[in-house]
Length: 78
Image (cartoon, rainbow, N blue to C red; front, side):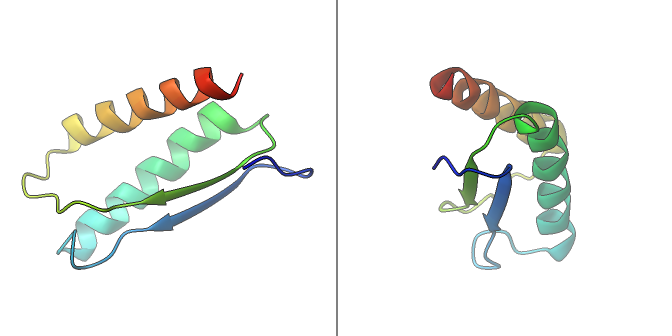
């Protein structure tokens, strides 16, 4: 969604899908940092929702997937 002010980010990472608080906090940190890199100049609102359970929590794989997701999203909005 495009807004008229600055980039906004919302995250829904339920305990049902990501059991450990350490993992939820790591995901929040990664998403926040990557979104600042990709969307700092954009005037959009982004809501990230975890709908599937993450069984194999591998930091390197999750970071790559989020990075790819943001790249695709950035291409779509430009």
